[in-house]
Image 1 (tube, helix red, strand yellow):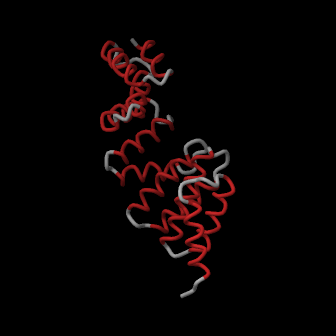
Image 2 (tube, one colour):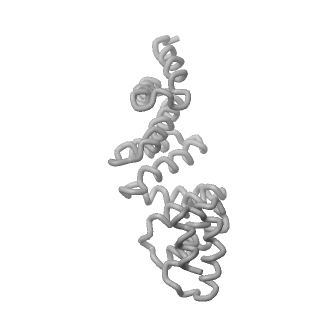
Length: 189
């Protein structure tokens, strides 16, 4: 059951992996790596609430598992536990692999609660990470721009919009935002 579940998990067939891994866990509750694989399969299948218990258990078995830690924080955010998720994302911000995504998620949570200064800090930290995937980098810049506009820091937002436009000119509504806020920046009234 474990090997079949692992094969399904590795082939990104998470819904098929979950029952196999649950059976393996029932047969041997002390089996190594079953809990973390099951927890991640549930998380990736978008069973966020159900995955939380297994993610906690996986982290008890291996506290250094950053993938489970990030997944748990994201699942908490999806289930409405924003404060708890924010603590974990803040803890993960310096991590080279999950840091940029954690900064993005923390910034989004801060933006939702209209704490735009804190959101800008999160996005700035995320932008400093090296080897960030381009889609995460673009989203960090875009969210940073929105936070700049919310704090009436239009000039800094325009700079970020131009950088986004250099990377991907068709990204979301960057062209419209650039023309609107460029005009606002020129007109002091």
